[in-house]
Length: 74
Image (cartoon, rainbow, N blue to C red):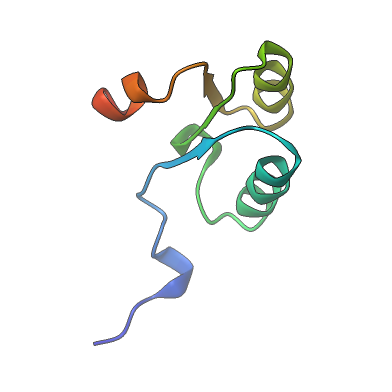
């Protein structure tokens, strides 16, 4: 059995707990390499400034709390 690495995550949702520099770098790489589409990514952060920054920069969803998103996914 082989796994198609190029499409392994296409239909998955990704969540980031924390939207700091490391998450931003990972999100940028994921989107640039088309691993997952922006509408399938959520970043959670306590800082409204960070949530606004990553939301505007990458056109992704953000939340102060991640629990509600996992219970009611996109």
